[in-house]
Image (cartoon, rainbow, N blue to C red; front, side):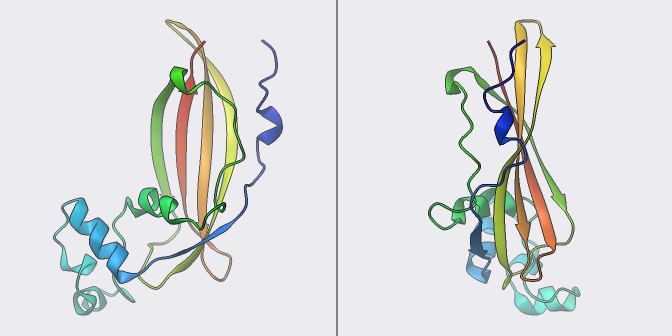
Length: 151
């Protein structure tokens, strides 16, 4: 099989972006996904639970990836045929929780390319990573998106 045209992009980061996580965004997302725990809505409840501020719902990184500044936080321009794509899964890896008041830097990259034989032929699996870093440069979490492209 010929080398994938995207192979040179593996490990290359797109431009960084800054994401401000505020209380309103946390409350809005928590309400949208049906959460009721007061640690997502009431700062006093969050502090009583030992958090520095409102804690973000576990799946918030999926949404805040959409909050990037224009042109920032994007993946390198991976070439694939969108008509042949399947969502293979999304995984969020946390190093620490996200809290209201965090100012995060988002960096996107094509993490890897693999292939797998399926009943309909070979599929190319792209793993893309959006990583979020705090103001000290420590990773807070990483969002891994896996998509596959068929023949």
